[in-house]
Image 1 (spheres, helix red, strand yellow):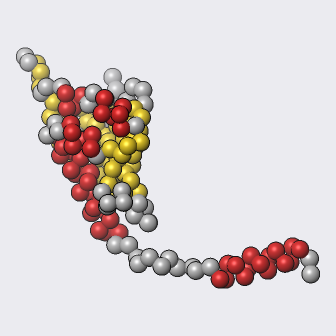
Image 2 (cartoon, rainbow, N blue to C red; image 1 turned 135 degrees about the horizontal axis):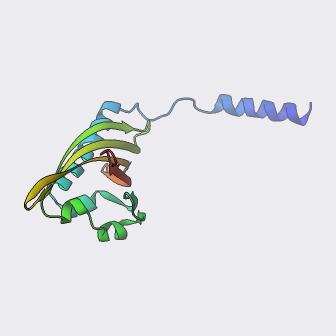
Image 3 (cartoon, rainbow, N blue to C red; image 1 turned 90 degrees about the vertical axis):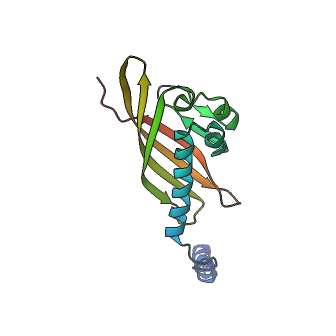
Length: 160
């Protein structure tokens, strides 16, 4: 018998001995999506309330933020030092809608897409407006809590 035949036979034998089904019970994907939705809604509620501590606590220790037209913000220390304009600027109000929530099959990661109306009150002028699109990648922590590992946002307003 050739080495190739023996090798193929060994692979077939190993494949037939490997468990094909996970020993874990099936995941309740609706519950997983609901859990991540709650985390995303809490994040946006904290942002709308200008609660910087809760917003920052939503990020993972090695999170990466990709702000528009700025350098990357990498790691929790840089996230803590980042100037969140919607929090620090007086007269800014936010109203977010969660558009989409997806969770991985094993429930350890997910992503959310939200859209938010931003109003900027200005003395003696019409309020400024923006439409922000916010994309987060989330990681489930061992304690079941979700944390943001990637945060990307941009304006949905037409240019010019």
